[in-house]
Length: 430
Length: 158
Image 1 (cartoon, rainbow over the protein chains, first blue to last red):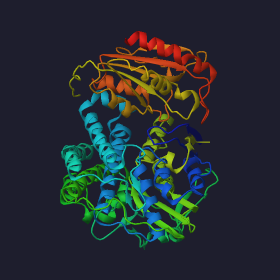
Image 2: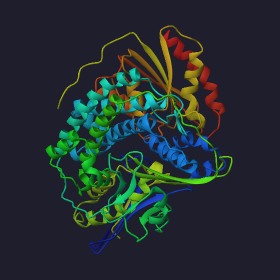
Image 3: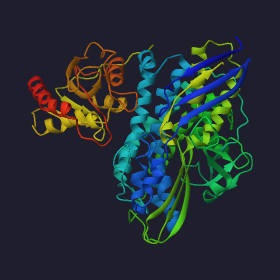
Image 4: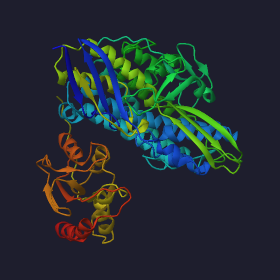
């Protein structure tokens, strides 16, 4: 048969809904298109005309898995517009709540969405039946991450305690000490997770990605840093739109895709952060990486599950360090004076770089808002991975090929519900 | 294959109203919970939950009997109330309770079962919905069943 069609209506085990269409002609992959139907980004429109102070609570509603990322990019961008700097303990508390999000989001992806691919299960339920202890470990990790978000954010999903200039309420030292015990257990569980996932069998794959992530001299990136890449990008967050272009590139999808201005796909997320910041991981994490057989750069997208587990370990370790050194600030919020301006910020959502820009008028009303989520930045890279991989799988029957394609997409932990609204999959052999 | 222990028993009884308050009939579980809570039944906790599986799973901890109320789409007439004892058997396949995550109530029950976390008694009340319009109140057919369902729950739990 010269041509065939494979259609996958709904991507399983990804956040949100999506579809993929692979076109195969005469034994060659003609196209691998991630199809996304994206209505207008309503959140950008919701924000216009709202007061600057409402932004953390509105943007935290974008995603139930990574609300902290949206909240953090939003407050930092707003503080940039208002010329405010949040330092010391308040800055550390923001880093701490972000650790909570990395722990819960990564644990969810590792245990419920990604691990079943490597162990040959259709889904988390089947895996839990045979491996309840592993599954319980994942749940425990997620619970600790959620508890940390609840402690600092007021509730575990769509937190409400973050405000422009700081927080509404800051925790007492003893409150943080109480969660430290859970975090120590979580750190041990994270180390076990690294050992567990590094024992999986990984397909050979070595991609020459342009890794894009935040970097700063002294710490592994969460809330800030310069935008850097392994191919020469080194810019401030405010130059994001000069370096990257997000537009509707392709006829097959109404979704926006980001590329570098030179037109190249790039990779954001755990592999990029790890490759560009390996030296800034804590000694415990670097040692765990070595034991897991990983060098300072990992170009195999399937092994993102190992890097994700190393980041969970780092987030537990970093959270404990922040709690150990925490000094209660005198005030929960710095002084905020409203003025007109434009603010930009990037933070590292679990899935990768998350850019926000806001324009304010003199009374702090939002005139314009721009949000570029990590999944739209990774979409071109996902398509390139698929095109490359499918070539080697043409001999497979459709159902197996379909499953393999889904696995490639899951390597990215895409949050389609953040980037878009609906999505579906189809493989066309003609 | 490894094993985990059985959850310890308690006398806590819990009613969980599942759903989304802003999506028409999908709110029915939560509205039942809100109105049931006003009755202040002794030794019964009443909570609401969005219906994500892991969130529901965490609610089962330390509970002896759980009663879940959710909207469902099964082809029955709108407002029909169906009761399932899922203590020993899963929800029937045809009983798709609503989930905005595709990983909802039925998954929570089965996960709890394989992890030996299912309460000693687990009952699901499913209310057939009519419409899930964003921002709309309950439809007439579903609103009419709310008090009937509360009466049934009270009779069963008391």
